[in-house]
Length: 360
Image 1 (cartoon, rainbow, N blue to C red):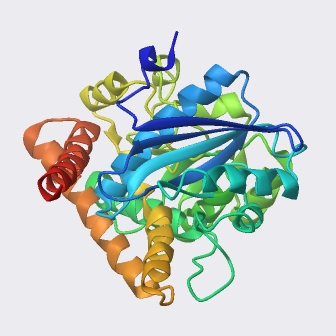
Image 2 (cartoon, rainbow, N blue to C red):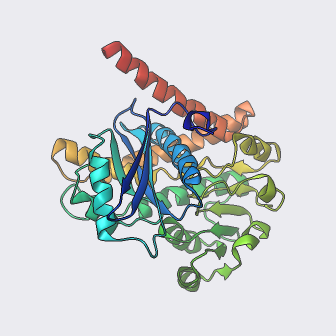
């Protein structure tokens, strides 16, 4: 199967592969759309089973970033990058400097930030070779780790779902199954526990899992057992496609609200959830807080000003309003939430593309 035959290819503007023999860097950058501005999206380092698997992931993730940035009403397009390798054993400063050089060759059509397996410190190494990275921890424009803001958006979305489904303003008495307690999942677990939720959680990193469970009072289960938990809300916060034909037969939660990207294995899964009465919070809507944080850094860089947390809060509050509007439309139009979110994002991207065409 060629790139253009891939089911995940969605008229991407560019897909770029990079290899550096000295550091062992194997990276793919996918630019889905620059209609609304430079493509911006995180860098994931993962021990993929094959290059084909990495390609599929970066294609799906980059398209998701176009939609995420559009739904958050940011002047940025969508892109993503993946580095093939084990972040626990193969990560080096030299590798990320080589990655920075690779990103720099794209001439500013793509800006990278941190994602799964990549830290703010790693991005700082890439910054030594390029200005086309975001999510820095030093300087007046720096936004730092976007994970806490991502978690805040998912938390507020969870509260919105609780008000709608359970008629309560906090999470007292609700059981939430949290899958993945890394960068974002850990921050989210703290917030959910503080709001009164009973947590059941899992993660492939046993040490991190034990630490988060100890401070939140959560029950720990094996990775495959998380789907069988009798929970009110399922919160996928690890990798994508955990909502698939197999897990649908196991999940009994009334709602899905999590931080993971590309939670639906296929769009049809979203419709099945809707038909079964399960409220699905579109992932790229509720997890948009982090990219809003990164966008504030981009704004500061362009204006030569400073990072503005008030702008972040304004954009995040508006994003949660958009999420609640999607829930309202879903109920009024009897349509799945992900279809409504997609339509909003696609209209905004198409509008920007048309504006650019007219200005040309």
